[in-house]
Length: 147
Image (cartoon, rainbow, N blue to C red; front, side):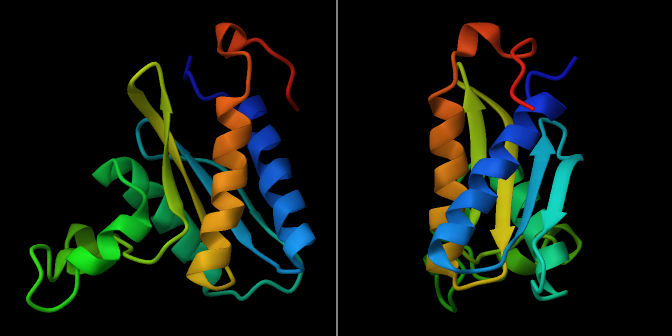
C-alpha cells in the first residue's frame, strides 16, 4: 500500500480546487505517488487544455528532482548550471512554478502539480494542498477517511 493513498490525494485535490476558486482561477491539478505514477487528476471547468500534461509533468518533476519546480527556473536559464535540464527525461522536466514534492517522515512520497494560471498562482494553489497535507494527523495516514 502506498503511503500517499487515493483518499488523501482526493482530499488534497479538494483543498487545491478550493484555493483556486478563492483566487478566481481555473486549474488542472495532478498528484503522483512515490513511483511517479498518476494517482489523481482533475481539470476545473474552462481550464486550458495545455495545462493537463503540464500539471502532470510538474508533479512528476517535483518528485523526480525532489525540489519545487519553481526552484529549477533560474538554474535552467542559458549559462546557468542546469541549462537544458528541461530537455532531459524525454522533455518531461518542467521548470515552471507549480510543482511541489510531497514528503512524509523525511521520505519523498509523491508530488503535486498545478497548471492553468500564472506560475505564481500555480504555486499558491499547490502550496495550499501541501500545507493541508502537513496538517494531517500523520499517525493515521493510510486509514484516515479524508475523501
